[in-house]
Image (cartoon, rainbow, N blue to C red):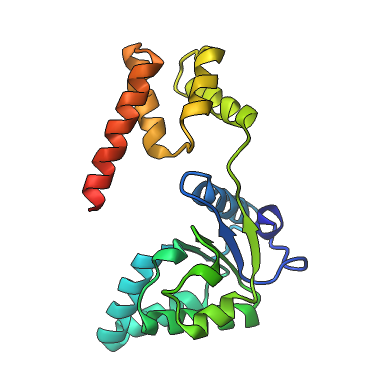
Length: 219
């Protein structure tokens, strides 16, 4: 689905496409790659990438700001050829949601591509108002599943290789078994540990500390 949309092919998919998957499975990576491919094929295209929370702030600034701010906001979305909308599960605010439903309708009329990511399916998102929920339930859905163990081993080996280190196969298998998700934080910790020449047990301890630190920041 992503490859077809990156090639500006809407014939096989309903618009928008909603990509669903857990944290760390590559939703953001996928849509960034899609955007780069789309730009490569159509350099003059206008592509918007925005997170749900940033969209809410942008909408409020436009609606409660002066007329030029509102016009700039409306022009931005009215002229977009592709809209990449991240983290639907964090979308709050009935006003901004109704406006985004309008953005989706206008995008469909002019055949602009819209791709949305979410941790959960639309039907499970109680925070969405009925207008946006109804609009998104007409979309096509693509679910990203957790990779199988062999692919997880390949990911660990590839990450180590990009960091410039030779990761023993047994350690890669241990990683695949004990680390369920590969995300930027995990990659950062891998780099720290490999740079120090430490063993895998230290990696697991550092990964745990890093995750606790991030959770503390979020709280």
